[in-house]
Amino acid sequence: MLETLSFILPELSLTLTLCTLLLVGLKFKNKFLLYSLVKMGVLATFIFLVWGGGGYLNSVSIFSNSLSIDPLSRFFKILILFPTLFCSWFALNSYELHEKSHIEALLLILGSTLGMFFLVSSSDLLMIYLSLETVSIFSYVLAGIRKKHALSNEASVKYMIFGTFVSGGMLYGLSLLYGMTGSLNLLDIATQLKDYNTHDFSLLFISLLIFGGFAYKISAVPFHMWTPDVYEGAPTPITTFFSTAPKVAGFAVLIRFFYVVFSTQMTEGGVTIWATTDLHWPEIVALLSAITMTVGNFAALSQTNVKRLLAYSTIAHSGYILMGFVVLGVEGLEAVLFYTLVYIFMKLGAFFVTQCVGNKFKNEELSSFKEIGWKSPLLGISMTLFLFALIGLPPTSGFIGKFYLFNAALHKGLLWLVIVAIFNSVVSLYYYAKILKALYLEKSEKEFSFTLNFFDSYVLVFLSVAVMLLGIYVEPFIHWVKASVYFIVG
Image (cartoon, rainbow, N blue to C red):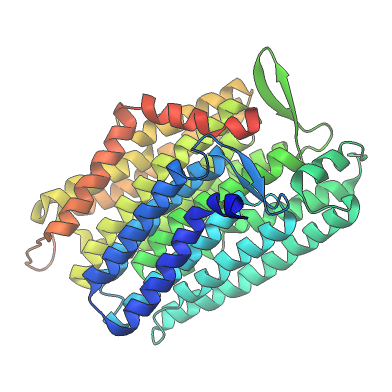
């Protein structure tokens, strides 16, 4: 038992941090003390992820094979820690959250993070569903954390109703899969399905029901409708968290489930690939990828609220990442992992600038961004870098990330999908340029000054450097990504 517990030290660390924060928060309301507890908990969790349980490259199945602790799960857990750390700071400095809500926001963020940690390691149908519901329940409460705010209440209700509907469909698909194979374990299910008639429509129907549950978390069409309303209604720090951490966890469980259950691993010419026999879900998901990026980008064109604009941008980027997912090869997996890494910093940066402007003008409308580039050069330059990265312009990390995705799709023969993605990247240039136009070319109707405090300036510089570093000094991060797909290659 002690040896088994050593593999879930990161989860135990988060649990201890959550309990400590709850007890301390009842007595002390100092936000620096609360954030210090979060920082120490995140740091301890990171250390356990890298050095605990036999080392980063160690792979093991625990708790009757319901959890897989391997390099892939550790990679995604480390990525999830970044939004947890930064969004906790954002929450403590947002005009939308009063002092009494600080402790609630931190506890809910940590609780959701704990659920995501279990989700990315889940290798059992029951564990996948329980973890997904844990994340969802915390998310519903986070969206409505401003109890007396109409938009926040609306966001929470819409999120819950849509999530409940999709969750029911997914649970039905999981129950059918269990009834068909007689097992909850993903590897056992995959073994049983090898002898199953894949021409049967029922298997494709089951895969689509289950995909819907995961697509809801990553905001893929047609399960994206909740995204703009929830992102606009929730406080900006919570929106930032929704836009990053759950997306990472969603892609993690999507990869683990579909690459194990509905694919067959083989090696050709020394390269690991996956085949799906007669179950053509990659073609369907490739089509959804094209539709998702197109809907996200074209819907963003008419937005005047920056939070809604970035919400549609999130939908579009889910479409881009799905390109690598449908490649069914190591190259596609590496592209997905690297892009999720750079996506985290691009989105954290863009939303943090939005929060800084919101704190000043008490709204996130595009008109509030006028002259910000001149009044606060650091804010303007940082936002420019983040937007360039989201577009995919060199030498930012977004360019390298899209290059790997497009290259993997081309090698798979998905030229049509790459053309659609390039077209959508050009379309995205227009609505991102609207923000840049407001920052530098439009004059504000009123005089104002804009000063950032030291900690906000530090966060902006860190995120800006990260976005540029991942585009210039790529090699160490690519090695990390290659090591993290070992579980499915070895």
